[in-house]
Length: 417
Image 1 (cartoon, helix red, strand yellow):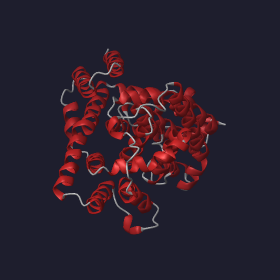
Image 2 (image 1 turned 120 degrees about the horizontal axis):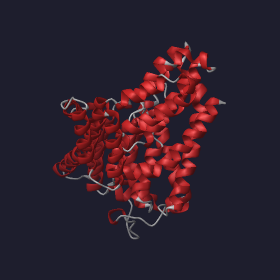
Image 3 (image 1 turned 90 degrees about the vertical axis):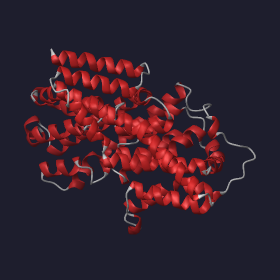
Image 4 (image 1 turned 120 degrees about the vertical axis):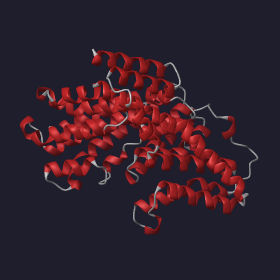
């Protein structure tokens, strides 16, 4: 009965999010209800408290939004947008695919999907919106590229699979990179075509991002919004060791350089930066906290455990489970890690019994979980992109559903055959 109740509540949550109800209220309410049914009403409250101090997310999201507000206050964003206007008009067709691929490349260097969404999204989403791309499609394009981390040796799943298989981590990446890149190509094409069909690829310019015909561009000002991401990319490549730093440090350096270049009042830019941090916590971190409460409810009522056990206890369909099990759980919980690690730990060591190699099976589970998380409306990266664009996270999932399903199909076909 608990499983049935959990299924009904989950369906109701999806319906409520699609209809546009406040995501925080829906997620917290449903999480509390499931936890009460599961007999552990304090579990979601503990999850709430834990998520409030999630240092990695809070540092990245709040610092990025603080920097974004400082850039908007000094109008450096206007200088960048007006500087890019002539280029955008000439390459409009390649704008959305360029952002997807650009985000993917950033995510290879910065293996955190949430960190990538914050750093790249702060630049790419306003840029797409200034070019006339609808806010939801702009956010979806960035979110679509947040699984490049599979090509990073530091992604936890790659060394985990390598250890099981007894091979080097680069051998694992060498096995699945073709499937990963093929899935990226398919997803990029799908979202570009979808934007054209929905007529969201032009004609949706917000007033504050309008290109001004007589605007005099200061190219030094225009450079300021991209300074932090340049620092992060250079640091990740080890080309400039001094630039090896976290997202918050890069954002603060960017804000300080903006202060120096624009000669703005330190108090004014400081107020703007901290106002942005506060808004980020309320509008973005708040939804992430709420999503944690929802996932806690799912866990308490037993749906997550049931799903994983069903996946692990059906060896006859193990290939399908490897592909779609982690994907579905990643979609449902916003993180593909739980199902992927569980599957790889329990089943992947016995891959030879099912006519597969450990690297092959482990790669399938990893790609499935990653793509499921990329499509999920409650993933941290989705919520961050939605917050930057000012939309409901469900709008991103609506636009990323077809690209991610097509990417999953193509990627799994390559890994299987």
